[in-house]
Length: 220
Length: 253
Image 1: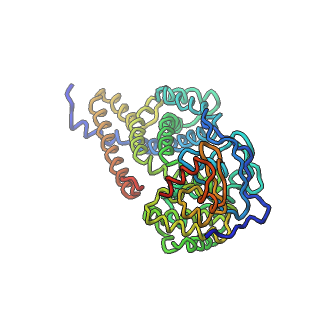
Image 2: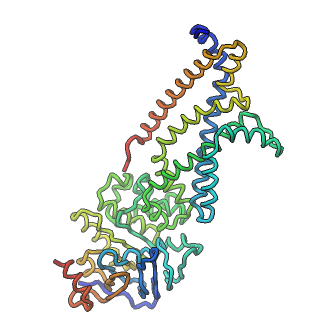
């Protein structure tokens, strides 16, 4: 079986049917992972007593395969009466998995804010929440912009995992083409090229954003 | 010339009784007794590692003590207490490294706690901020970011930021130690003026000229203990403790 380039071009419209979902899943999962990751990190910092518990959760999230977590959610949630569209379950699964990594990014980002900043905030009598919101987080964002950008691309590239729970995304639509035509090389090639293109666009966008925010060089 | 002492009122701004603190197994404060009257100007000096910073940082609980009592503005402080943020609003703190918020303008550095903690309206907060920036002679820099200012200017902003809260007590932790020599004076001038206005001040500093001019009392610390305290005239002329004599010998030459 030879690689048929014109066939690869011909099936592009069918493969592309999944791209909207792919992008949507990536965006939802990125936002979800960042929000949940920040939540873990703030919870981990809030009290010495909850710290080991949160740490265990984060370690557990990071030490089990994303695919297993996604299957687990997909098949276990309905037992508890929660039936959500596969796309949402999948996005939540990816959010959950990457939140473990994001929390470590936020940890490093917060640790890199000098201790004097929180001391100054405390000595002014700011509440803990105000200190985090107005003093620590804005400075942390500068520190985490680059790793967050890298994870956004990791998340994008993980969206095909949701094909296993029948979410109609890029890989899913490519597999549909494959099972109709019994040709796998071309659909997979298309998927690869499309991910390459999306990643390149994302990288360019992130670089542009960092430049506009003045984040490319340390500001102090 | 020493400024007029203002310790006639019996109110204590700070009272420490047998205060002890450990870092792990190392004891940094040994049974410290200290009473600072309202309006009093205290300079704390001593060799590095003697516990002066720790002493001052205990007063707003950036460090917590493990033994003894600490009463600040009439309220006893202890580890894990509630309402600490509120009490801290009455205690201004100026750090060696300024610790201005780099992502906020000078003005916003000053207004943040007024708006968020004191719950003032934005324009009211800005008015207070500008007043205090004028007091430290830097109102024209209000819309700049801290990194655009010199060290001396940054430290004056830090003083203004603390003053905005109308503190009853100001703590200075080596405020001029990170400054170039020519900038030290502009900061000390502001501090001297503050002292003249009757602010209760506790300053950790190596600026002996400032201590001589402004302090009502000098506290000399060594190895976590207050080993001598006296009016500057006495402290500089004939210190009693040999460790203080040795320290002054090194400082004044």
